[in-house]
Amino acid sequence: MPPSILSSTMNITRRRGAIAFFITLGALLVGVAITLNIGWIILNERTVALAVLGVILFALLIAGLVLNTIFLVREVRRNERQNSFLNAVTHELKTPIASIRLYLETLQRRQVDEAQRQQFYSIMLSDSDRLLATVEQVLKAGELGQRTRQLNRVLIDMESLVTECIAIALQRHNLPPEAIVLAPIPGAVRLHTTGIPEDLRTAVLNLLDNAVKYSPSGVHVRCSLAITRYTRVTLRITDTGIGLPPNQLKQIFNRFYRVPGRDMTKIKGTGLGLFLVRNIARQHGGDATAASPGPGLGATLTLTLPLTNPTAPATPIGTL
Image (cartoon, rainbow, N blue to C red):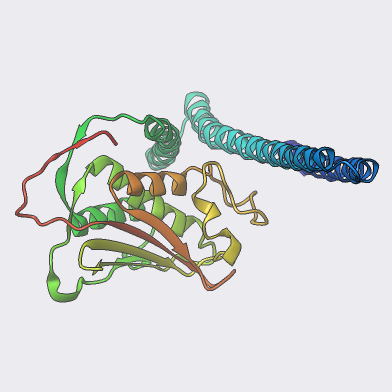
């Protein structure tokens, strides 16, 4: 087992032990508090005021212990997610850099024919794109963490935006055109929303990358755009990949979160992609959700945004 994976496994074991310790400690303290309170009531059963005071103090003590235990467990889990994120980002940064360095050293030390040279250039360019995508994702997460971003709305044709993102995803992952398909819009209507093109492009690309990444047995992604509730434009991206258990459908949108039990040695990521999708959607007045029939049965990720009348004038966003 590689040292990084062994170290990660040991860290996870230690964190789980810490969580178990805090839960056990909290349970013991609650037991001690209950025992002391019962003893207080028995000793002061003839003094109503003291008995009532004991009950009140007991309730406050129990509430404090429970809140303290919840806080400690939450902090341990947050640290676990952040450490997993740091490990993932380190790998996502180190791998393409090592690859680029290897090919540069090969070009420097050896004479290679033109065809192989062009192949090396193509691989290095792909690795640099991967490196840039990781850096941009981390920077975007930091930007979204800022509460004030003064930008202007523009009218966005969602079909054009999604088509552009599909072309980028196909090129990025070297896929044939039939791997990712956008279904025709019913009625051939034009669906528009108002927002920041760069952010919405990031959200759609992250959804597509997520669908491709978690389809190890073959990429068959189907996208659709439609009007829902008369005031919303909805993008659905459905894959036939590894799917999701029901208890993970909401958690996958948390910062740094990655579904436990998946083969982390083959499927890499920072745990920021879907977090960015949800935050971008909400900052535009929409939302992002996930649905899946179960593990191994694929998943559908949905991005919902406000529908905009293309004849309406653009207005400033204000504070996002």
